[in-house]
Length: 329
Image 1 (cartoon, rainbow, N blue to C red):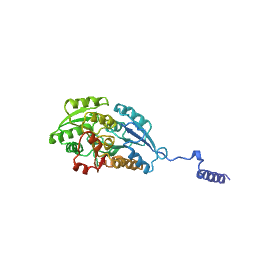
Image 2: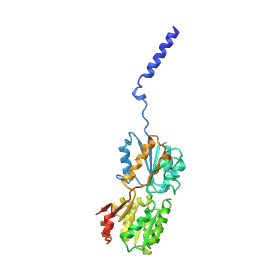
Image 3: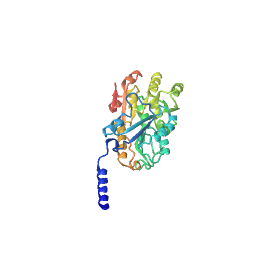
Image 4: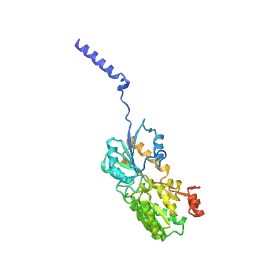
């Protein structure tokens, strides 16, 4: 009798175990958390990182449904990064996306386990973020916009566009470790082109008028901002000051030319930025970041703003216009 009762109880327990749980008690699928750390202020609409978020959606990652995205911005102030990283880690993200080298270095020191994806940073080998592009190692991989000779090429194209230039004002955010290699490359190109450089360290927006004033006193006849995020965030002010001082300018990003800058030689293409989403997807599906090779740009685009050229009284060489990937009228 006891044996029969025991069998019936075991059968009943098995049946209960196989019954579906009530709706409120059902286990829900894990929604991954992505922490997006950036220097750029969050715009009301439009961002240079939009292609990344659009590709994420194409891959099925919809914010608030299949992924939770926390957008943390330093609002153009690099000193905010340590507290932002702390806030990010408190949220226990499954993956972290970084858009500038200084914050990437802080995150790498803070965690050796959470995967980190670089979204078009500077040279990650020279700045110590990865062991090599082919085998980054540790918990970090992604995209770099730096290619050998890119900064030098910007100066060469500027000289080709305005052959008379001989003194170039260089604006650089030297706190960012990607700045110094660009300045070194510009100096090497300047020697071969017979051009002199005046390098001005820009720490905040307030440094820009003084830098242009120093350039005017030195008789600069052109300006090149290097590729750090601060100089992207402050591009409107730089465009205004370049126009005020009537200086032809070569930028690192096409978006600045579309906003009124003269020229850009740009590896930060929408197609390339979108590639960052593929890294997120592969890692969330189990790939190890340290085994995913860092990708470099395969295309660099020349963009010229003819309206700005006319305002400066410049006639762009026909050969240069033919080579341009985009001409803004």
